[in-house]
Image (cartoon, rainbow, N blue to C red):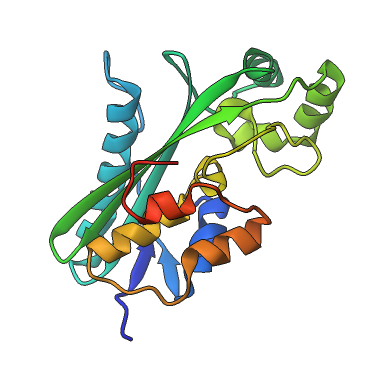
Length: 220
């Protein structure tokens, strides 16, 4: 089966790791876009706009025959969008705010292929455990929170901030692979491997929502 040239419009190491599970070669071409949130812009509109802008920007550079995929992930607590912390104090504030409560992670995907644009969205509920202040201090000292929206990585083995999780693990990492797989189908592009199975094996996570996502339900 012949597949289009795949271009990931992101320099995120986590997205590179995840999209590699799709099983075919890709190249990375980060999109240089303004990521400022517009005044009064709802979080869902914000994350979808950024994914589209990133995909459009890179598609203009590579041409219509390439498959360009872009992603944007935001952490939402109530009406507040939590970005990447600028300091240890801000990381501590965010982690304290999220501790012992649930919040949402939105990851939007944008695809450009053969003059088409396709969007998808994963909304995931994330229940945080009641970690201690000492655990937060050690995690911040590791340096890991500073390039993460919401100041945490769900996959961090030492901190393991999330408990009783039942959503799309890959989406919270920044790239929902089952949403990627179903979007490929909508674009008429076959899969090289069983992307859902590859994801679950790689992340050591039995996903309870994979089948629902692949069947077209709005799930995550």
